[in-house]
Image 1 (cartoon, rainbow, N blue to C red):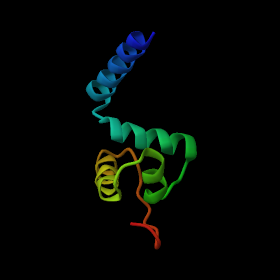
Image 2 (image 1 turned 120 degrees about the vertical axis):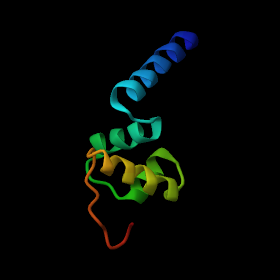
Image 3 (image 1 turned 90 degrees about the horizontal axis):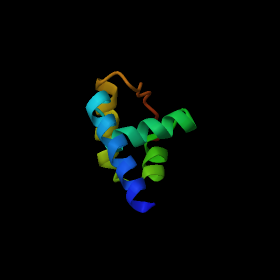
Image 4 (image 1 turned 180 degrees about the horizontal axis):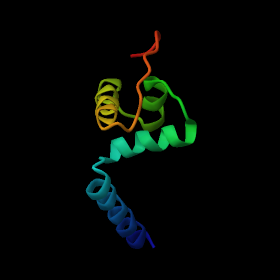
Length: 77
């Protein structure tokens, strides 16, 4: 069962990268925003457990691709 689960996850990962030009972290951010709507970078960071500096980079990349709109927050970059 675990082998099958890993194989399915790998195929999904490959499809996301190939067809949508998204890395796993970028996809994770999109997933958080889909289910939770507007979030601060800190809130997203807490949900997917990566460093805040890395998260800012990921958000900037998603914004450049036109997938997210970054609305500045006075309490959060």
